[in-house]
Image (cartoon, rainbow, N blue to C red; front, side):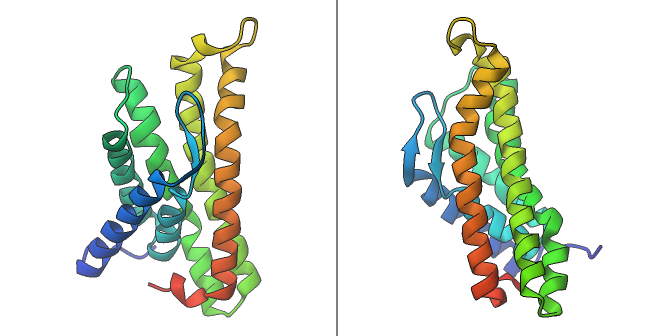
Length: 187
């Protein structure tokens, strides 16, 4: 595994893609009544993670979690804050786990393997975000569940209803970008 260089280009890319994610966080396709929405917030973070690797993705995700809280501050306690903001958005950066596979496929001009690496990375990052929102929903918002519905099921349905579209949108856009513009993913 190669070492991450925290040079000016790395820092600038993290800042630019985090800022883009913050702007896209305001542009929502669909808002849930008690928080959460279908947006393109994940796209710049997943893109950066696939382009620059795990560390860049994790840093951008963490910064985005803090910015997301600043944009719409709400928290019940420190643990809920950590799960819904810090851990959930940092989880998007786990898309970088497939960055090396994507880069390897691109060096060998194997676009289909590169697309799969990008899509799998998008799924990993969005699924990690979902898991943290699901846990927070189960632990802290279970009392919002309809009478007779288990808190875990309520959280699964609620968070899945906006996270699944986010995952699909991100994966499709990443697949299109990797296939049509592979040079964008070469740092």
